[in-house]
Image (cartoon, rainbow, N blue to C red):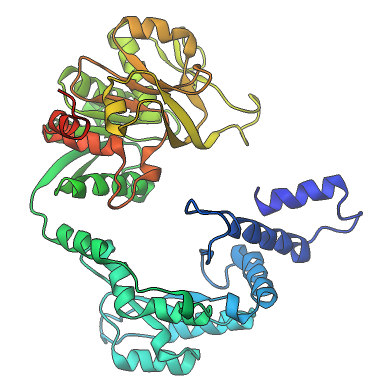
Length: 471
């Protein structure tokens, strides 16, 4: 529960006995309680709390938005004691183009501001384009009151997987463990497999083209989790991901009139890709273009993965093109549609926007052991994946959709929420209501993203046969 909400509920229960609710101490106490409650949750399958709880406080020192959190951390550092608190301050070391000198003044000022707020940095994590000069480190150590061995340089590297190796080489783990008085319990970092993975990625030469059709392609960080999941899957197959970003609206017929060049380029890019991915999103902008992309993939046997909204898009397109329901739609886009194939199915209130999303890890039961999804997951009963949505496929219309050939091979425990769809007549046409990208990891790619890349390279069937002994 968010600290602010926790404070409001306590006030309404009368826990504060009529006192004026203030940022300090009530909000800060709630933040501390939240951190301490999270810190004791087992995270690695073992009983008992973890040895170390990592807290990330974003924003910039001095921003008013982060002030309650900084104050809460100041109080927490005092209450847990110096041996149980390690503060790593992340700062940018810019280089002025004309002079070419690495400037430490921004870091000096942010450290001074942090100290004025009651927190002292034990380590500095300095971002820079090039490795820090020794003179730069000396200056930072002298004016920021941080031991020179605790000044970590995180400079630009060929790929982000080199960062843990960079930190290991600077003995960052030693400095942190020393501050937390945990050196006697520590072992040497086991990064051999990670090193091999980072170096292997640097040497990859072959790539696979992936058409990402979305509405937020102008800000690609909106799809960062999806991009990382694609990277994990591609590297597992010794490939580099070549993502072609396509604004969904550029595929629409209206775009052919208003921006013919962008329209032609979008379609050329789509048709050149080895697979199509339609990620999640909210609102009706670009929906027609997404449906055209789904239709193209379905009719031309191009591997397709639809995530959240992408799954709903595939259902709407199928209902319109195959069932002939020309006005089939989601009630999110057309509340008066005569064929509401996607409806509002909140777990809470149907009238309030807040707290109505289906969130977090939920269980999906796999109903068809012979489906591609079941074979990729390698299990026959269920899978736990994370959700983030309000709208779902209308359970009252499942019969008509399945009779026409679309199969819903994954459902929740009630059988009313459709979680996974497949088109059996297609090499790889999969839609999922959940977000498989959230659980993808380097070395452990999401099964569905891996399936998409395997299908795009024509190796899906061989992979399934090899790993499941399917003949």
